[in-house]
Length: 193
Image 1 (cartoon, rainbow, N blue to C red):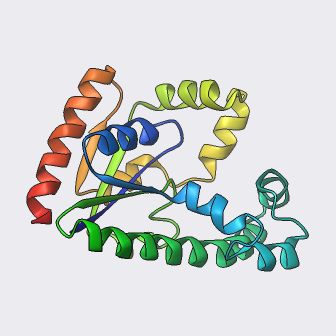
Image 2 (cartoon, one colour; image 1 turned 180 degrees about the horizontal axis):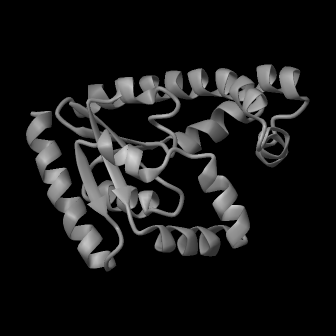
Image 3 (cartoon, rainbow, N blue to C red; image 1 turned 120 degrees about the vertical axis):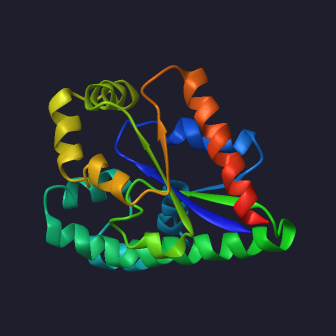
């Protein structure tokens, strides 16, 4: 079995590539989805987050920590370990079912959160910054300034690319992105045997 990280900047096409990999037979685990689960009532991080911040609502938490590195660090110190533990549990379950499979762990801040040590290979998706901004505005219904503010708080894609084992350029057509995705997955399957 091979555990692969998939990351990239805001609006770079992580979701498209992850969906394609799932369709092509890879096991895809979304960190964002796990984050929802650990923050939900009864979730592994819910009570600790409520005790620390007074709420576990993601929108309210975002407003409380955005632009406040110390508060964001406090939140991440509670949520990230719970997300990573749930990811490991999910990976262990997949390992039993498909010992030679490829598991793709999708996380926007995989590198920044220390999750790089939990994966064996890293895929970074990227596109031109103008495309990234336009896509993020369309996906989130956000203003250009709001997108730029979010991007400012993320590791630049150029830095992520320096850590990549594989890259997928999502700046072209969907067919071209899909072609690259298939090629990368074929290479990963060879490593999973």
